[in-house]
Image (cartoon, rainbow, N blue to C red; front, side):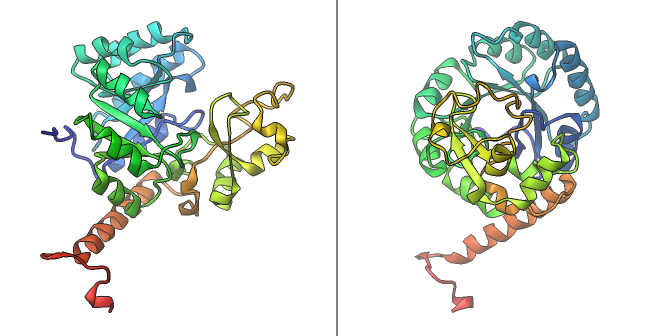
Length: 320
């Protein structure tokens, strides 16, 4: 039997951790608005800065409507993990999300103070490995996600994971409105991951030109490529062009085209997901969350109207 999520939220959603975008202001605003605010540890250049950020976030969210989460890289080549785990033990983030490696190194530390461990996964194989390690939840990164994106359909991903896992399932990938949240919940997810929807939030650390580009662009302006980092990621076409690259050149499909380019990955080449069409203005997080909540309520009402005691009506009688 699936356990209920232990936190009461305004929306069953994460403001997803975004590299060079998520900072204390965005996390605190998300938690105050009733969604889980998350940030990646590498956003801080040093562990001293990370310690200060984490202490600040813990203090600012102490009375918030939702918990906060810290995203850690657990790959064997990541040299800061030991120091970052000391910060975790000191400040006790309610949720720790692991990425790019096994969640095993963090589980004992987080469980010692009663926190939850979620593993970021992009495939069924990785999901099964994370479940075997004993995680509380999976963050299933599906097709349509920004940053390092997945390949699976969100619906296929949820369905497959629910065959072997009854813990908390978070799904991300192009979810940008309340109808998307409703669809994810109906498919079997407990929560959703929303990054792109908050990229242009007033509280985000994104540069102003980045925010403006997010507002101006749509899904057709994205390029999906492994060329920039060696791992499949979703990039804003205009930002690649601004850095001197032709997004349509064959070299983009190779993994060495950026070797000689002085532009910094992520800083000058910007990423977003397929939910771009819903970002139409630079707004406070609270405004975005309130709108999402209204959209979710409308979506649930539509679904309820479409279901009769004898089955599903293809067309609502009220609109016939």
